[in-house]
Length: 341
Image 1 (cartoon, rainbow, N blue to C red):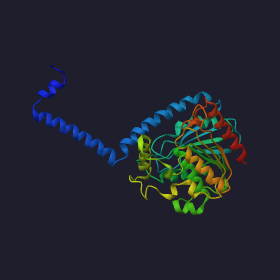
Image 2: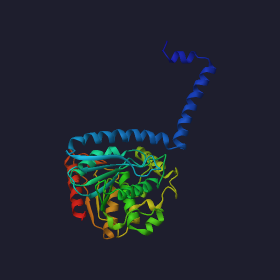
Image 3: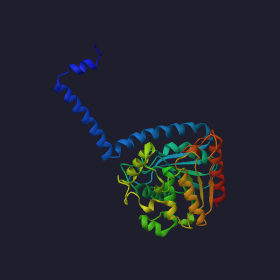
Image 4: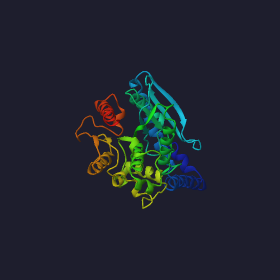
């Protein structure tokens, strides 16, 4: 019986068969080594996947962008850093500097882009604010605490150029989604706690009195809650490896200072915290909200019951075609109005 392919393989000389098998084994070994010795292969795959979703999400928000929102794009906030770019949005009718939301985009510390939150920030700007999308260096090329230092440099740049960018530097908000929420929350704690700032090794560019509040969506705030088994576990291992630069999750990777709930103080600014009921990171938001409340910090939390339907995934707040997404936006604006002055 002649079976195409198989018959030809059987008829191959023994030496050729051996070489084919050796080549297959070598390819498998190289692929395994690439995955085990470097976070890059997995990081690039996850980056493609997340960036694809981020671009689509931003495009879906375009229909919600109000008219007459101006933009000043591609400001280099550090002349020595090619990744140090930010975009500014504002209502064109504004005649004076406005309370300003400085937003750090998500993407698991290894993906995302400031432009992927551009339309959401245009929408917030349409509600009467100046909004800023901060770009920062991604892992695995850059490691912690580089993004923190960059956000701090961005704050210094915004203060120096406040008048021309329609920014009120005395009424600032730090904000972020997903990994960006972690960076924003950590930066807020640096501004709020001199002891913590010393631990991290960053001198804040602004004073605590200038920081009116934080807006945190779907964040990763405490790595001790992370699960590293299964497919999602591989994703988390890649994130931590890419951001920390350390493969083994020992003392160096599990830096205690990376846990926001463990390090917050009573001087942390008022916080709006939200997460979807089907988000794997939901325990992080609840833990942070509880930690802040225990220290007497004003917390406005938007959480949803376990049985809320349709179930709300990670980054649900960007889906303004849903009731939950619109509620998150309205609650965000309400929080801004209540705490800006």
